[in-house]
Structure formats: structure tokens, C-alpha cells
Length: 210
Image (cartoon, rainbow, N blue to C red; front, side, top):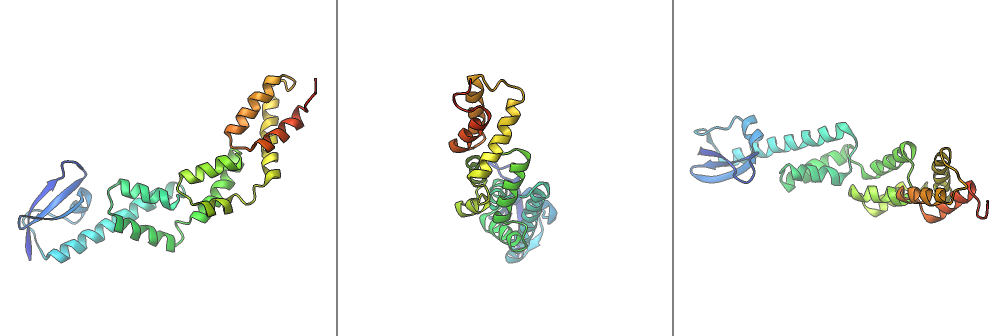
């Protein structure tokens, strides 16, 4: 058995504390974990039991943090990992929490990617390149990105590009050469390929048209 002789706020990470047992450093934990366990100077603990309690409470809090993030919107595995690591949860606990959430289906990069593409193409149509870039930024791997984009072929890109170009045309003079340049730049920023852009603009303002 050992006695907690000090609980000190860490200088470089104010949200964490160092726990000393019998004058020796025993563990570094979130201050909230120490508070939840009711740890205080003078308490007597078996060191293994103390370590187990700290790990269980830290895991519980990491899981709650991940579930809170998922309650706002679906997240990729990489997003959850980065947020938990950024909150100073140990790597082994992050792995345990992410693994559990994946097993119960709350983290699923394949589904996340498909839903992301579906949502973006409905609410704010974008081309394959922009969608792929967004998914990469969220840490999704290449095979899952390709699977998620499987239904967006050249014709689908063209139809989306044409729809967006038509909206631009409603407030513009399509005979003005500047319209073609501005719209091409806009569609390119949305991630559409040049072939889809050219087809869409040729439809609205055919080459050679006065």
C-alpha cells in the first residue's frame, strides 16, 4: 500500500495533474479524472489498484468525449483520433476507444465517406477532385474515397457542372466572353474536371456563337 503525498498541477499542461505516492511520481492524469475519483493527499492506495482506477476513468472520459463529438455529426476515424489525442488522452486509450466505437458501428469510414459525398452533392454540388480533397483532409484512405466516388462518373460531373453553370447564367450575359472565364474558374474551384466544365459551358454558350 502507498499514500498519496502530493497532487500537483503540471506546469506545461494546466488541465493535468501529477500524482505522487510516497513521494514518488505515480501518474499523470486529467484534473477532471482525479476529481471524479475523489483523489486527495493522504489517501492510501494499492498502487496497482490506483493505476487501474485511473485507467478506467480516463477511458470512460475519452469515450464520452468521442460520443459527444459524434452527437454533432458523423466523424472519420482520423478526426476522432486527432481530437482525443489533442485532449491529451494516451494513445493506448485512444486506440481502445476508437476500436470499440468501430466495432459497434459508430465509426465507419466507408459509410462516412459515402454519406459525405451524398450530402455534399445535394447541398453544395462539387466535382470529384474537391470531394476527394475534402475526404483526404479528414483522414480517409484512398480506397474508401474511390469507393465513395464510384457513382460520380463523367456524365454525373457534367450534369452537376451544367446545373451550376445555368444558375450563373440566370444573372449573366452568356454571350459575354467574361462569363465563360468566370464560370470556368468557379467550377474549377468546386473541383470539377476540365472536361465536365468545357461540356457544360459549350452547352450554354457554344463556341463561335456571337
